[in-house]
Amino acid sequence: MHIEVIANIGEARSDEFLHKTVIVVDVLRATSTIITALMNGSKGVVPVDTVNKAKELAREGDLLGGERFCKKIPGFDFGNSPLEYTSAALQGKRIILTTTNGTRGIQKAIKADSVLAGALMNGRAAAAAAIDLKRDTVILCAGTQDVFSLEDGLCAGLILEEIAIQLGESQMMTNDFGLAMRGCYLDAKDHLFETILACSNGKKMKKSGFLADVELCSQINISHCVPVLEVDQMVPFQR
Amino acid sequence: MHIEVIANIGEARSDEFLHKTVIVVDVLRATSTIITALMNGSKGVVPVDTVNKAKELAREGDLLGGERFCKKIPGFDFGNSPLEYTSAALQGKRIILTTTNGTRGIQKAIKADSVLAGALMNGRAAAAAAIDLKRDTVILCAGTQDVFSLEDGLCAGLILEEIAIQLGESQMMTNDFGLAMRGCYLDAKDHLFETILACSNGKKMKKSGFLADVELCSQINISHCVPVLEVDQMVPFQR
Image (cartoon, rainbow over all chains, first blue to last red; front, top):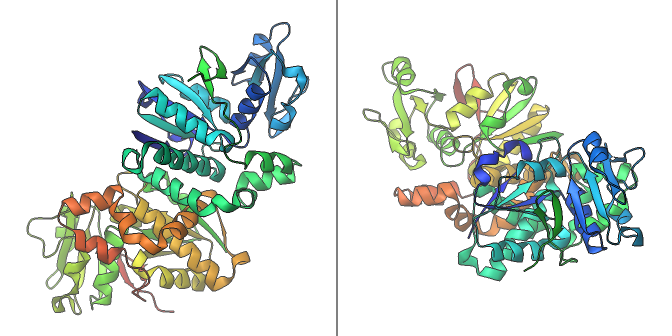
């Protein structure tokens, strides 16, 4: 199985995703949030790129979520903190979500055969889903404004490590950037929280009062839920 | 001290190098070759981007070196294998060198205050030279045709690690990509040769009969020589 890791959305070209599985990774925080929302009973998360589109799409009973510059959008039900997406209010609800980078990553991957959402919290399950789908796979690290973000690279490394464990070492082929991310994950795996706190988005999150988000999003393999794009919304992947 | 690591030449913008020190890294093989040539008595290496320019520049007594697609250029004295640059014939000679990626990296960095050549073999010395120069520093990984190459990232990680050791941990600041490269280096440092053999250029070198080059270029801190650009040629950096 060949898995290519791409460092940020700016480096991705939509056409190269044809016939492939793409795992979009935005650990802080879009994909962690989508996973948490689906785990907690939301029936689907619709990722959109603008605030206006989110408002237009929302029908009676839908919830609106999202952020700009790490802050909740005025008038929305939720921001982009996964910790907000644990309430009973989510049960059976559709969420329209707009975020800066994660949503763009999902849009960019739209030509793929399957678009999954990966994060540290579901790394093992995302690896298993990609194996099930039996396609060449791309791990698209969302990054931040077209710059690589360490936490997304660590997640790519985790997914590669899990694929190597599940399929066997000789069956996991990746590009040089993937090899680097796997090494970087293996070096950091026993202190992921501290490592992420020391990187650009980790520091930004802490400064903005979202330390608990970093703590939650740094935990590995705590969820079996893998969001997959069906038409326009992310729903739980069924094996 | 702030050190930014750039993944490949295509991502670099010349203007961002103003007033900075740039360490160009092309482990396989341009910068390893330049270091080896200067260590073995060459008085200077002139990096140029085309074969024609190399021929035009060469004066009586100069040696011509370089490669295209890993192979020596017809009529040239040497290819781009550092192992060729150990002979007594180099003593006091100027070498005109043209390679695919390393030379381009040096040209791209031309607006910097100082342009150094780094490789695994001189990582510690390159770190010390950058510290001496007291400027913000960029480590420019040459990569291959604008794609990241693992061996260059490992070298960036080694240089960051050395700067942290020499200056103290709290004095070494880097971008997220630098943090990732440092982690990836720390994970691989006890088996660099095997790690590089498993990556894209390592496999290509082995296939082309240059296994001994990979072995030599995978050794860390075996040289005190740091090439620095003076006008148009790389000469040994003097502290």
